[in-house]
Amino acid sequence: MKEGIKLKVCGMKYHDNIGEVARLQPDYMGFIFYEPSPRYVGKNFILPENFPSGVKKVGVFVDQTEADILQKVQRYGLMHIQLHGRESPTLCASLKSNNLKVIKVFSIGNSFDFQLLQPYISVVDYFLFDTKGLQPGGNGTAFDWKIVFGYQYDVPFFLSGGLNPENISGLEALTFKNLYGLDINSGVEINPGLKDKDKISAMMIHLQATNN
Image (tube, rainbow, N blue to C red):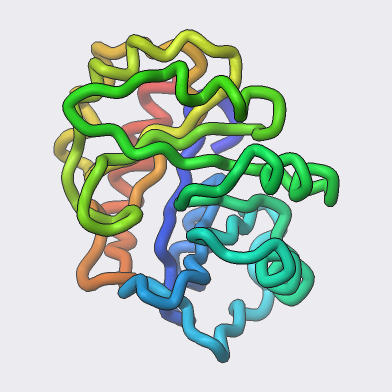
């Protein structure tokens, strides 16, 4: 999946399942290094051998220190960092200065003031818009995607929030400015962290048809 809208599979946790999904060759795979998350990879996490070089590895963090983030970057060869908390523009800029791609997440409820993004415009590579919920991600519900029509900045973004093979068809009628990719997680799960590869395959087939 190299053209058109990208696909990111987030919240990967289990060794064999990571290998299964990696073989499908999504554009990105996300690994959560936030201990309170049910999708936390664990302290002894090891990536499968022969992890495809074409699948970009994303480390997901929530209000963690720069030192902790950089330690995980070095250990796992991460090139993309997803920040899911209240991280400052200063932290984003510092991570970018380490040749990392930065994805900053903003949770959206019934409304959202996109001017809140302004301090981050020059210090991130992507935004990610997720559903506002009790947890920082993986809540399994979608927000009203039409709110994203209010986004008018040039920074590309990922769309997230309960995406699955059934509701993705509703995106066909929505033409968002600078939509870069879809982020899927709880909508394609068997259990937290355990992904259904058949649902992911269905998402990829649908996206490929849309991209063509």
